[in-house]
Amino acid sequence: EADIYQTPRYLVIGTGKKITLECSQTMGHDKMYWYQQDPGMELHLIHYSYGVNSTEKGDLSSESTVSRIRTEHFPLTLESARPSHTSQYLCASSESPVETQYFGPGTRLLVL
Amino acid sequence: SQKIEQNSEALNIQEGKTATLTCNYTNYSPAYLQWYRQDPGRGPVFLLLIRENEKEKRKERLKVTFDTTLKQSLFHITASQPADSATYLCALDSDQTGANNLFFGTGTRLTVIP
Image 1 (cartoon, each protein chain N blue to C red):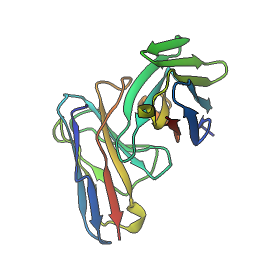
Image 2 (cartoon, rainbow over the protein chains, first blue to last red):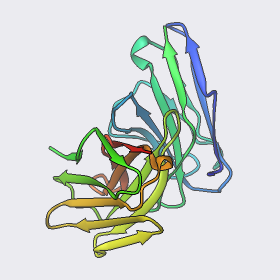
Image 3 (cartoon, each protein chain N blue to C red):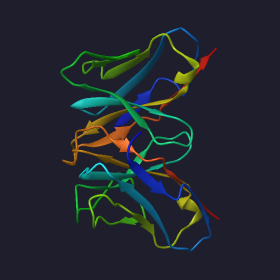
């Protein structure tokens, strides 16, 4: 079992609310990622980070933002949630860019 | 355009048989390819990695092949068990942005029937 945690696991929230999805890993990995996955669809990379103070946008455009102030922590924030943000959000980390990725359990977000 | 295609959305096989899953890609030149397992409501779990200069990799009942000429990887589970039922994802790297990020296929949902 990988040492990467996500909270909350499930979130139901109204349109316009600000939300932060938490992701923490205790493996000391430099690289971290956020993916979005809709049912039956592939994972799409929305953000990644090479390390502290590094954040980059992934191949899928997203209205969310991320920060990386500490190595172990990579939160994702939506300033104003909309129904189109309803999805599963998966956080992952890896020791280096070409190594395997370790995934958290995911956060299922439902925006009403 | 770039594409990663996995052979079918769902595959049903009898317990004890060998399951073979296919991953085909176009317009990528990956240095390596990975296979992950994903159970419902969970994050993917890494299974195997194979590099472009390797033809085959094995781990217990799992075997992966990688043919860069055909642009295809095959993933085999021998002596399949009901506990092997899950969605299997292939993923490959792309260094087009210099980031070596992974790109994932949509997965094949395997059901092993007792």
